[in-house]
Length: 53
Length: 323
Image (cartoon, rainbow over all chains, first blue to last red):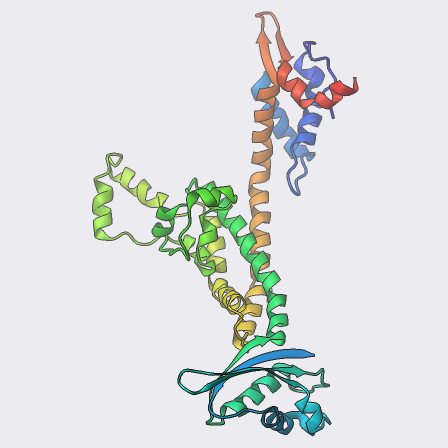
């Protein structure tokens, strides 16, 4: 997965939230862990909101 | 075919005939072997006169594959050597090579070193989790003696740590630090960092492993390490693997209803860590990654999210090359 936006392009958070999550999901490999559960997706969103809001 | 090498310190002469007569009495008729057949099993290697006028004789016994019932090859060998021992002329008898023991030891060797390495993996993690330096003072705190001295530099060069220099069965000692002696307490109380009783208490509790689940793991393996150490020592020193050593080792290794074997305990340790820490770890790694990758730019009217060029390029270098 590659964040497809041009590196010089400025974007709103909502535009690339999904891409960002996919990118993180691909990079972070933890043994026997599923990050796609609804419960955990809420936590990922909370993290992104905390860091980027 | 099993090969046994035996060294005898004795008086007078030992002949192949004498040896084969003893073995013939043990196995000849039972396994339909003639006296000549049995004599051919022995090979005389050396005899030397010793300064005290006794002799040292070495010979080999090549034991053929027999159809055995209710007895093992090693028992035949021991029984033969005991008969030899009962002759007063034979002052001492030592079995110096034993292919039967060699094969059995090899079988357990692989398993034992695998467990030892896996335990080091767990211990290294537990001590790192607690920010404890794996050094001599730490070993002293837990009453652990090192098996040999080590040089810090050569250890680092070999990508090892101090756990490579302690006895196997001491791994479980990390479950509880040694009680402080009075003079150590007095010394501790005089440290400038101790300003009140809470500081003192936290200094004392810092000596122990902090996480209960880690201590629980160490306690769970405590009784199982001695049998493993006994097996390890017997193998490393190529000593007889007694039934007792083997039985106790098997008990320590296998799962028996509620009582888990060492390997299962280690696997469960990691499973438990994953259950407890995976979410937190994922989120912490994500935070680290986001901070490296993205900068928020706030121009008072609108917030923008800018990719940090260098890191973006580093992360997606391959993609750029393709473009």
